[in-house]
Length: 185
Image (cartoon, rainbow, N blue to C red; front, side, top):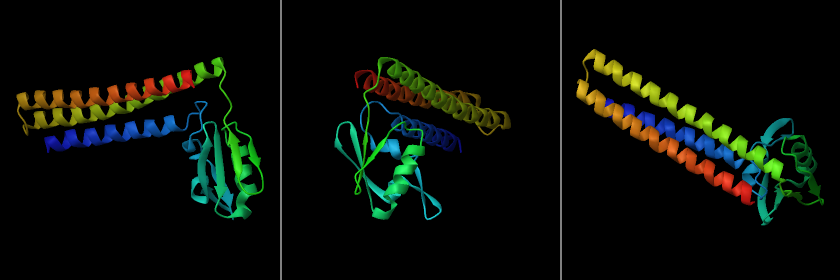
């Protein structure tokens, strides 16, 4: 039961890290990244459909995304969905594919994005700390109920803290890498 608590906490912390990585992937850093389009939904025959399910997204050049729809008749719908999204990109439609040129970032915009990365990192750390708190509460309850000894409780709490430290360290590493990508982009 107690190892189960630590395993569950570790799994939930990993989920928080993966969610943070997904959020980082959607931040425009001045280079083409197909995950920028992950949140774009296209109204396809009245059904909001993820763009990535309707088309192939390739990166022919470092700052260009090319969207090739599987159904050519959906080209205009895809173009409208990209324009309506909050990406701030202007699609170039040549009748067969849509090209999205990722503009160079200004110094001021780089600073704004770096702050956004930090804010997302802090939110991910809060999620990790909430998982830690839940695990600690469960361990305290087991100690109070007499399911584990005081020494076992102390050891297990140290293990939970170790897992938490690893998770927050991973979040910091991801944030630092993204900040570096943004400032050097």
